[in-house]
Image (cartoon, rainbow, N blue to C red; front, side, top):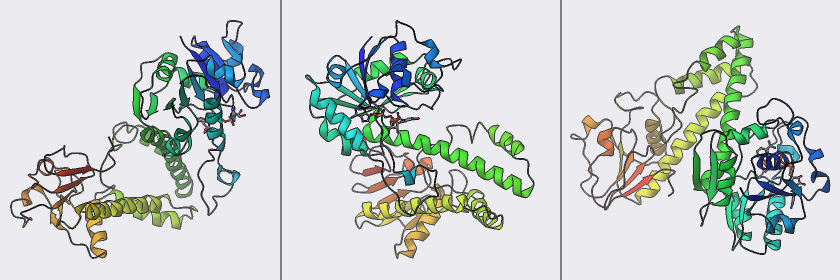
Length: 414
Ligand SMILES: NC(=O)c1ccc[n+]([C@@H]2O[C@H](COP(=O)([O-])OP(=O)(O)OC[C@H]3O[C@@H](n4cnc5c(N)ncnc54)[C@H](O)[C@@H]3O)[C@@H](O)[C@H]2O)c1
């Protein structure tokens, strides 16, 4: 078992420190606020790992958690976890109407805490940042101050009240790293779990994006449920029945399906349903329009893919392989690829279209190097004999690396 330092003993830090100690580690805690350097500051709503009663009721004399000054915490620990606040201004907490302006989190406390850790460290140390940052935040606001030390981004996916249970039975352990792989932080976080769950060791940016997208996903589910409830109230449907139906879809809704690379949503149903529902939202005066927001985001993504394709082509002729909305079904209704082609045409950009694999033989394709866009992930398109010197833009991640051909799998950074 390790000796773990915890800097920042707030709503997340203190129950984390306690859970680490209850998992067998020696924990040294430090907070700028002396009032937080005490077990008495634990929120009474925090439950034990079984969610059976207050976490505070599980303390006994064997709890190996000690409050120390920063230098002791850093230098007597095998790794230091930092769980200080990364607040948003009061305008952005979601308790007032959404303002016109937007802002990043404040990283002042996080930067100051990490700098303070580094300043007192008398040897190289592994620092694990738990605080939530936006993608790019670690490299911009933390990494510049940790030269000579190993930095891990290790956000936690916990909920207030169940920190102990969530840490001990996580869905996964997530570790973002840069130059050096996580060692002690990994061991410590993995040692807390009582269940069998995967560990992901990824780049800082991937870990940051996973953390915030996770929260957005939860928010999106809640918001769709809210819209169902409000619409039910107004059109005379029974919300509980609708929720029961949606919950029973463990194949397409409550499942990993659709969480993957690809084009925008498409087909003869989804776009037109959302567009019609945006009309209904207006009729029912829902006050906001989730459906248009979905359609605008889809359009923005697809337009960006078209721009990315043109840019990657660097003057090569543009060929789109596949215009159907999904493989095996030659239907273009609601196809995001057709939308991309139309958006490009509106900017005066022409693309040669190969609608289906059957059309390859009869299409008038460039003989030399060209730029190809995988519009539909048909096997025949993935296996196409791209001429040497070509570039392939692949939003579906179906084309492997090729000799003499540049393959850009959108969103892939290795
Ligand atoms: N609370 C949650 O549900 C939750 C969940 C997941 C992630 N997070 C993230 O964890 C981080 C901490 O959240 P929180 O809710 O515990 O915040 P908090 O405000 O309750 O606690 C932060 C603590 O850090 C201390 N602190 C600030 N600067 C310090 C320094 N230089 N040295 C030592 N201590 C310092 C503060 O005094 C405070 O006690 C945030 O980035 C938050 O987004 C929170």
